[in-house]
Length: 192
Image 1 (cartoon, helix red, strand yellow):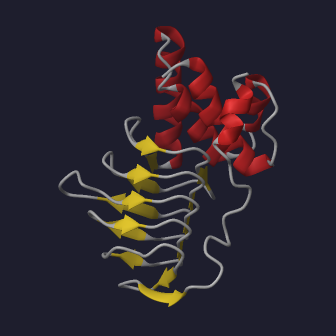
Image 2 (cartoon, rainbow, N blue to C red; image 1 turned 120 degrees about the vertical axis):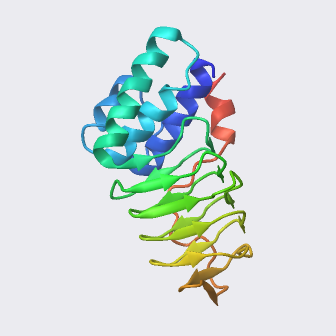
């Protein structure tokens, strides 16, 4: 991944926490001291940078912070812009998962698969605490998943689900809990 692209991903994660995107890499790095979820994401995103020296240093920090915070997200996982990890870990995400833009993931969440065919999660999705998403399910845009839910079937876009197994509770206000949504158009603005 090129530096500009890597910076856009970091900037989108930073925006989701602070509401600001027009700051430099040093100021974003300082924010890692105050937010553990962003600290992990900062080094995860930077670990995909193509520079041998900086990329390897970032990989080391990413692995150490992941061990300390009990966050297991492989570098190769497809993650969109504006991921937000709330309340740190433990969090486990399978390498085959696909995560869209502006997704909130709370503590004790597992997105797993035994056969390397994990969930596909849409944009503007809220995943509450202690959620388990099992195998190859599709979660649409604007979905809210309540705390303690177990997802074993596809979830239609714009719904709120909860329970074990999860059931549809509401179709009102899709994605209402996802704040400060990153817009991909801002990436084009930053590259000018």
